[in-house]
Structure formats: structure tokens, C-alpha cells
Image 1 (cartoon, rainbow, N blue to C red):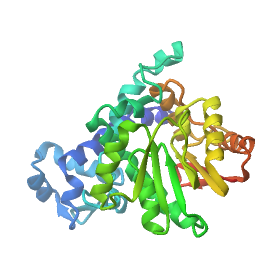
Image 2: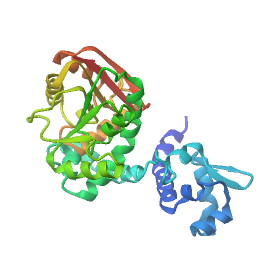
Image 3: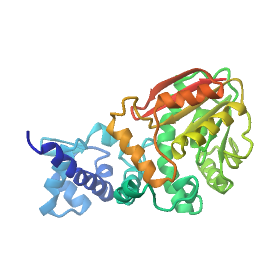
Image 4: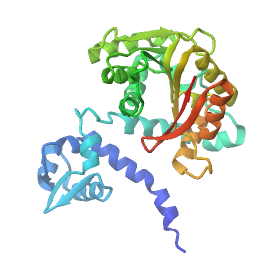
Length: 329
């Protein structure tokens, strides 16, 4: 038995830095129109010859570029997600995640010893980000990428013909609702967020050409009235709270739904056997960045829905990274 598994873990940061540097230097955009040789890329991107070949070959080894016949091109996944201007472009998601992770994970030993996290307001990072326009926009840009994929999946997976409206509870700047309304024009929708988020939603809807399409509802999910709807969604919201608060939010959603309505709850829920390292690591991350947050098991979430009165409760995989729990009133 050798130490290779441990050494691979220790060098993961190197892979992350290679990815971020390639994005920063514009490698994927330079290859958007086709393949280039190493000298062509070196000249176009202003790379030094001492580094360039190892750098490009490392990207190929990581599956981000394809090297063939002395030329480099984007791999399918890089061409799909890392080329600026694509409608599925990840934007600054990799960079923002890394910056956030570096700050948070440096507190892990302290958190394990004390149970405390860096000072965060009630609601954690998201609540604090409303105070800073640039910070909220960066956060929302990241969330919008996920919301686009989730919205398209929900639009196809569920039958919306009997529903007339949808409310996204804790929906940032309303992107998920906008995706659903675009796919099903008969729907109306609203996004429920603290009042300080209203300007961000209005600006974003104007940019999308959907001004007035998604209504903004400002308030506190725990205390203010939730407008009634046929479908309500908690997307990456319950992981910011402890079980008692999660139960309360689910009950409030049940009360706001019309009879026959549907609740959708999605998060990076932990597998029942607690063996998936990615989901467990994300749960630890939530504990580091929020005073009450963590991921939770789908079976527990299903129990909260059943306790609140929901029927036909079930859990389904979502995007290979998340789980959605569905309940009907």
C-alpha cells in the first residue's frame, strides 16, 4: 500500500490553480473558434515559453483541453461551460467558490474545537451580501447558473398545466422563476426575499427583458405573510437553518399553498448512508459559513413535509449534485 491517495488529495489545490489561471488568461475563449498550436496560443495569450507547454499539457491531462497532432482545442465540457458568452457559461463560479472556500476552510480546526463560525448575520452570507451590491451580484451570478439548469429541469420534469403561479422562496433575484415562466408562459410568478433585494431583482429582470414578469415580495420568511400559490420552491434555502427552523418554513409553505399545490425543496442533500464525500464536504462548508446551516438527508426532509401535512412525498435526484423532495397538498 502506497501513499498515492493521500498525495493526490494534497495536490488538488494545484489543479484548482491551473483551472483559475486558464480562465484568467483567456485560454478557453481563445480556443472557442477552433484549435491552435502551442506557439500560436503562447503568442495570442502572452505566455512565457518556459511555462506554456507544461501548462497546456496539464490542462489536457485534467480533461479541460484536448491535444492532438500538436494542436490544442477545448474539451467538450470546457467548450460547454468555460467559454465566455455561452448561455451556460459558469461565469465566475469557479473563482468565487474557491475564494469563499479558502476563507471558510481556514476556520475548520477552530470550528471543530469551538463549534463557532466567523461572525455572520441571521441567514448567513446571503443576508450579509444584500448590503453590498457588488457582492450580491457576484453571489447571484453564481446562483443564476444553477437556477437556469434547475429551472429547465423542473420545466420538463413536472406537469405545469394545472398550475397558474409559482413562488420562489428565498429566490435571490428571481432567476429560477423567470426560467420557469419562459418555459411555461401561462404561469405567473414571484420571488420572496428581504426588501433590500428588490433593486437586484428589478435590474436583473430588466436585463433579461422580463421587467414586471416576476413580482418581488419583500419580507421575512419566518414572520411575514407568504402569498398563496400553486407551487412553492425552497432552493438551497433550508440548508441555512437548523431542523426546527426547517420544519417551521415547511409548515409555512404548506399553509400558503392552495389545495392540490406542490412544494419543491432542493439542496445538496446528504445520502442516507452518509458516504458521498462531496455532499458531506459541502455540509461542513455550510457549518463554517452560517451559524445554523448544514446539509441534511432527503429522508429527514421528507419527514418534515409529511409532518406538515403533505402527501405523495418523494425524493428524486437532481443534476447529479442535488436532491429534490416533492410534496403535494
